Amino acid sequence: DQVLRVTARNEEHITLLGVLGEQEELQVDFWRHPNSLGHPVDLRVPFPSLQGVKKFLDSHNFTYSIMIEDVQ
Image 1 (cartoon, rainbow, N blue to C red):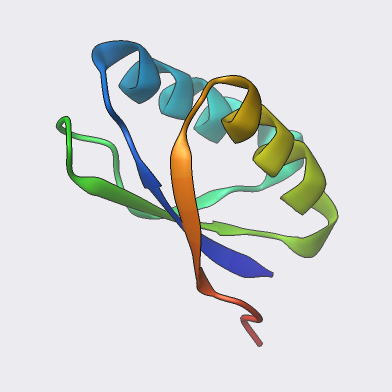
Image 2: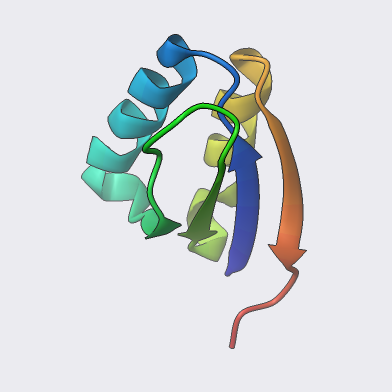
């Protein structure tokens, strides 16, 4: 698993993060929720979902970084 820090730059990004969180098959766990613009959002992503989540973030022009490379 990895923890990603994502920055929501506009209202659409906040909405899209909500949509991402509703995808139950991805099992994304929000450690810090998207509540306002410019504040980082931290999410734990299970290893099997990493490719899909990163592809989603890239396709919607999110800026993100890996906070924790390998969550045990």
